[in-house]
Image 1 (spheres, rainbow, N blue to C red):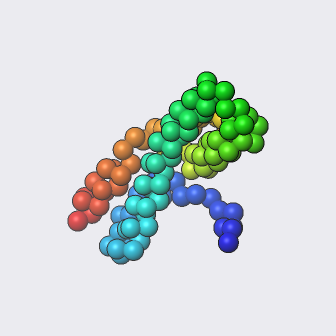
Image 2: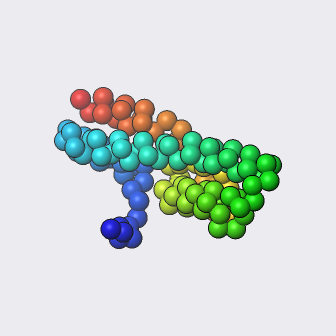
Image 3: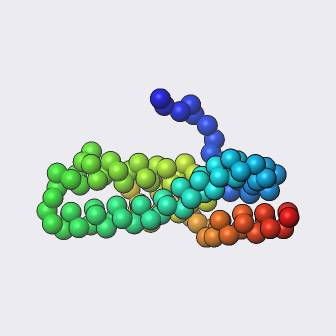
Length: 119
């Protein structure tokens, strides 16, 4: 089932919710899961970038041209990086999807520090 359109929570909102509702184990886990997913995007982007480079240099055009599977995967990761930007930065730059800037490298550590201060 497709999700309705929504504005992704900012890192500041996640931090605020973590401090405010982090006593609820389910909410805490959900916030950490969102942040973990965001942190995985740059790694996925790097893997796709390497795969695209290797397949292009190997002459596997059917995998990397037009709407080929690797291009499709790369464009989806780039779109997701843009959707949650600025908390996530993706190295891969797919045409039409400019690279996001990563101003806050260690979000999980900062969220954890906010929780310790609250206690």
